[in-house]
Length: 205
Image (cartoon, rainbow, N blue to C red; front, side, top):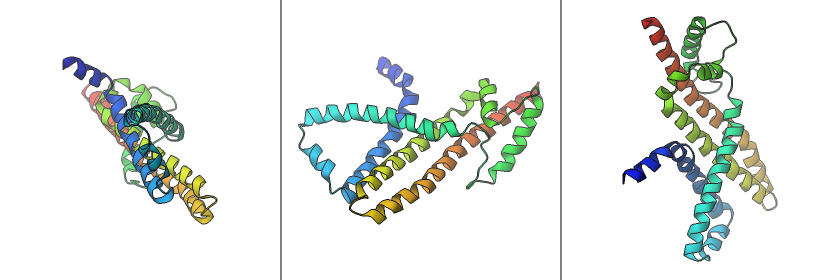
């Protein structure tokens, strides 16, 4: 039992940040298959022998989780390497973040700092904000899953329902931006927490 707990503990981050949120892709894909694809994929899977199907699903889900993680890293995390100020929603947090950022930069040596660089600089406070990073990864993968299924839907409808396909492609932008803002909001909360912790310790010293 202890061995199992140790293994689960070791893979806890991967399970929470990648595997669990990747299940959202299955939900979105089933909705697509039922309403836009005439159950073709579900009907095909029902014809496969159960033992083989389970193996296919396990291997497929592991691969899918990895792909979604890479997509999320590419379209969300890699584009958030500056300040985490809100552009669309939760803009009231910007003033708090800016004020704390300026106070923190004033305590550090001269240099160009933004929220991303400050996070990399203040290493010892990362453990205090573990849950914010996990939440950011979860939100990113959920929206990445939705975007991928939307692209699949648009491609499948392009010949049979061209207008519907164009509408879905048009919605890709707003959905992406909403996901980006929600991911950024988690990193912004992490930054605020880190800055408060650092400044408290600096005052004590």
